[in-house]
Amino acid sequence: MAHTDLTTRSRVEAKGRVVIPASFRSALGLKVGDEIELRIEDNEIRISTLQSRLARSRARLRTFVKPGRLLSDELIAERRRAALLE
Image (cartoon, rainbow, N blue to C red; front, top):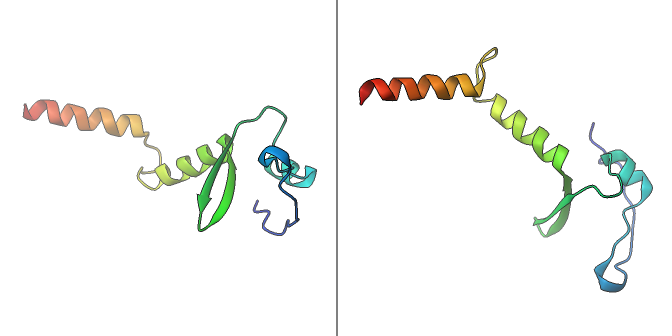
């Protein structure tokens, strides 16, 4: 579920600290101690969680695999074909 309708303002505090409001933490499923990734993209700071990055990666990988097949099966088959040609 996209939460693009959440907006707020915050201030940069001492030592560069910025508070992430509770509604944002809740929307992203962030808990105390969770690791996040910060990156600059399109001149904006983007924050993502490990879970969201994994979900995005899995979705991208699905485009390369036929339904009902595992990437590991594809790799093993490819290696076996290559071994036959050696």
